[in-house]
Image (tube, rainbow, N blue to C red):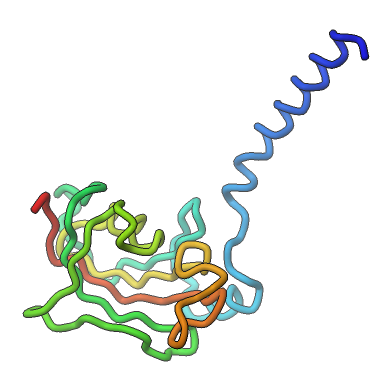
Length: 160
């Protein structure tokens, strides 16, 4: 093969893949049947570039900082399947859930959401399975490929 032609072919292929990258980032992450439920129940939900959806139920200090990777977050939450079945919760302010952000202690959807939240905010978070427990789920409570819904409140965060 002519070296110039080979170089041109690789250049064209590279440009094509680069042009498609933003389209891939924007692809729908929810299965069609879950998407229908989500759009009916929460039409006002905002969608991030990763497919995470959220609704700010109570705003926090918009001028304040947001948590960063490595910080410990203190959270109250209720985790549910799309059908409303609660699979986990930590709602007692005396015994909140604590975890480090960005250290593989949380599902990816939580890591992403917490780094956007402000102290005192409460969100409804809709997590596609790819950002949750994946194709395996977390039996017996979370089935395979489950879209998850969380009500979560960021109580505090820091470098503790």
